[in-house]
Amino acid sequence: MATVLVSVGATDRAAAMDETVVVPPRPLPVPKTVSPELQRLIGSPMNPSWDQHPASAEAWRALVKTYAADIETALPALMAREKVTIRADRMNGVPVFWVEPETVPSENRDRILLNFHGGAYVFAPGKAGLRDAILLAGRGFRVLSVDYRMAPDAPYPAAIDDAEAVWKAVVAQYPAKRVGVFGSSTGGAMTLALVVRAKAHHLPLPGALWAGTPWAQLDKVGDSYFTNDHIDNALVSYDGLLGAAARLYANGHDMADPELSPVNADFTGFPPTLLTTGTRDLFLSNTIRVHRKLKQAGGVSDLNVYEGLSHGDFERDPDLPESREVYGEAAAFFRQMLAR
View (cartoon, rainbow, N blue to C red):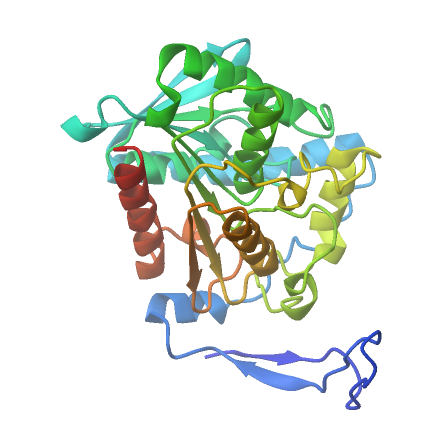
């Protein structure tokens, strides 16, 4: 099994509180405390695309097209395994997809889940953004996934504007407390930002949230952006494609704005929230900080930290035992909270 050699500086350690701690190079073995399947994923090479820096809108679009084609190729098999169907629709002018299971349990017939896909506000348009939705629909829920506008063609606030438009249509048809909202990565941030926007505009709030490894801080603020740099083998580092995508979507807007970095929001009155991350996740601090903000505001927050997971591994490889556990926990959380 592979071992990562971590080297972030010389061997001396800084003593003063305002200095950067420098740690010596050290081996980072694959943990034996995770499933064999996850051990293999942890030991696999770093994502080779992490350090791309598209120089133009055309270069970004080409990269988006390539990634989307790769994802869509695998969707038919995933749909067949999860026994779901996909139907395109529009709500308040925004394209959406209904992802529906073969059988909806009686307890879920008056519930729906609203999904926002991941992709750094740039990637996974159309059906390429449906993996998360398929995996929860396969657990007995009708899922409405939003194909929101993204950079480079539609920077902030396009995505959250689309989210609000769809939310208004949803709550006109369904009791808000019977609707759960979820997403991973950017989708997790969108899940939180939707509540920020809904509170500001005095809209009804969802019954429950699941934010999987949310990109809750758009700029490079938070411990794990540094401690898990080159340890997370999915995102690898903020200082590559991720940071470039953040700047592309923000388009000069203050990244500390709670609609871009919802960890900076007032969490008073937030719905019960499930949070999922992993010990190697670049967004570990994002997730933990959201949890603490929710608790400090008196909210209900369930934080689940998985041994060894890098960013979004549960969606990246849904066959992992850990992935099945993640989606099972999310389904159970929604069943419990939306029954209130």
